[in-house]
Image (spheres, rainbow, N blue to C red):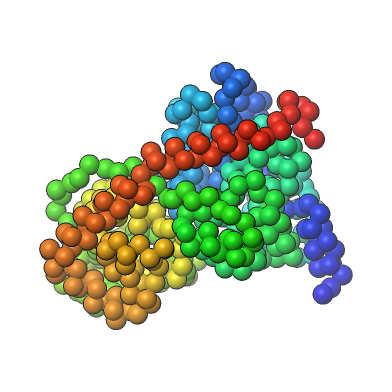
Length: 426
């Protein structure tokens, strides 16, 4: 190990975090004023969602992921409760500003790109500067509880800042990959900050029982189970014809396998909703080139979240080709709309197999083709899986039930908070 890497590693163990370089909103006084409005008994919760900007400003076309969708839904529902003051901190390439979206406060900070790829002493100044900037921003937001989903060195930075400011920090497991090894998906010389953050977190929320078992085995922590959730729509009698795939155009999601499936089933109609990943431009180009030659595949790029329901309403099946996931939002959305799920590999808590929601084929592509054809051809079987899926979603994944659990846990957590007055946190 080089001297610079050793210094970086030591610095990481102290406090510095791999945080996005950013500038705090110029009008941060607005954040504080919004925090101070209303009764003093309000529980103030800030959700940190750096990649969530596109959900709040769909006209931007900025892509987002499943963890950001869950933050969007949970924070929005929490903000409607008069006992809570909810805010979301996002990053965007625009002037920093604080916006009030109904009852929800949106805090936009300007991103300057990740420092993760830098190594050794060259990165230390940037890391330390970002850590101090986040420290100041947390003080200005002045929440009682901060919530963040997904692995990264920033988890350690957020946990440290909250500990030093006497605030509470909740870490949400976003994917099984967050727990597959000690560092999750975190790389770089400061990756030790991720396991530090997991240890320091006041609460850890898991989306599946599988994740709870992994968390206990990997870190010796007991996770709270709060499942991914969506509103359960009214039943629809819309004609269902298309085979639907929704996700980021990323190698982990294996979108080309979905197109391989479409090639094998030219008699069926397919719809792909793809979100462009700026780090996977070559894969995006490959997907676009293939789709141009496929008349029976419709493609939607960076579709706003509000437009997703219509596609699920008209879907006969939902297909997942990912290598790994947490609990996909698409599974909840499909089940809520009574749409069977056909998965190549991902069956969290074995719900597809045990609840009869569709088929999971254990990574076998030929079996995937067979399962899609059988369900597409058998109306009775498809209807039975759809009924089971909708019942399962209603019992386990309703947004109302999940938000009630969040409220109870946040209130219990805040009861142990040593909240310092404004200006005295140090």
